[in-house]
Length: 280
Ligand SMILES: [Zn+2]
Image 1 (cartoon, rainbow, N blue to C red):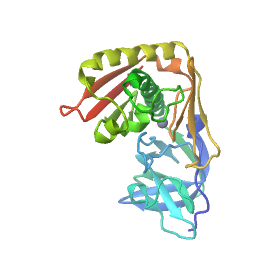
Image 2: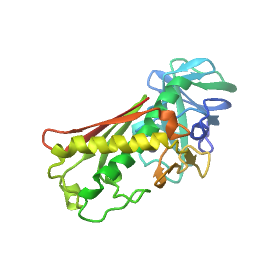
Image 3: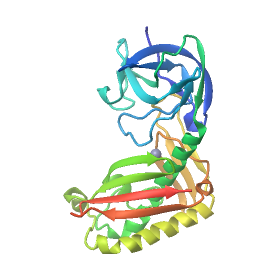
Image 4: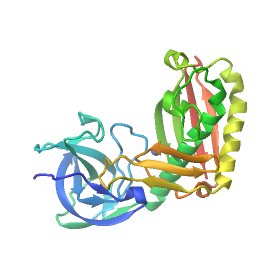
């Protein structure tokens, strides 16, 4: 079994079905991993595991998990998920979508069907997550005393500077920001943040309401169809076009979110800010 090239993916353009040829199989513990030429399935990313794996079926067999695989050029061993020794997209490797099933998938051409309802809920959560991050950047912009890189709308990028983890959930997201010494050294004022949270939450909510009402178009720009092609999320907001590097799936416009709300919480010791975003 020699794998030639990375899996081609259809999820960035919103595909939820496909038909492709089985090119390899790998054991995943007691379960079976299947690799095809081209798939609509979104796997969990091993470097930045924000959006969960798609569910669905391959050849009618339930896909219970979908993980990223990688094989070095000229090698045969497929590394899976957190056992991949290099970062996403490192050159000299083929990048693979591994569909995990309880039973083996037959050889030849197979139908791939993603659970469209679950995908839609994750796309909703992911689009809401990016918008909430941009709205939070705007609401915290006056707390910066030094210059840090700005987001697409010109606000100091608190989200990218302070993010510790981001998890996309069905219909929402959970982002955790670190407010430690390193952020303060970069010029972020944490004084009085706890008391200001209700006001910040209100401002984020107002901004999100405007953006949903504006029905701004959301697109994914992709330089190629390979799994690890460097894709960019773009949203034409009234203030300007925002762009965020992104490997996930999204709704086609902000209005499709219906409504978005955030809840902000500061940890007891003040070193972590959590933002829970909900949409729909
Ligand atoms: Zn993203």
